[in-house]
Length: 87
Image (cartoon, rainbow, N blue to C red):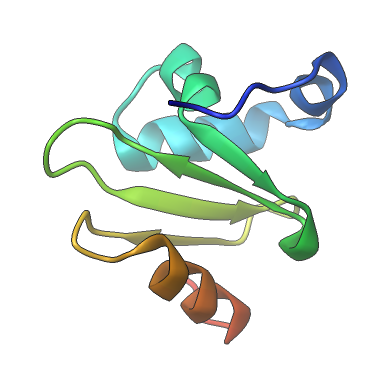
């Protein structure tokens, strides 16, 4: 189940971030909004593709991103992002 975004969180999510998420994960903007979770401690948003084998991406508000395959746990993905890894 996706995170329920408030109107202000959607307003704050830039088109650039949604475009990155949809491109990386090959999903629609509607799917990206439905399958996302804000990470305020990272100034970022976590997006995932819910299909089998779908990946995930963490995108910082400035557009920096780190994508990961479906086999990478959220915790491992977040730690790698915190450690400064980007792709």
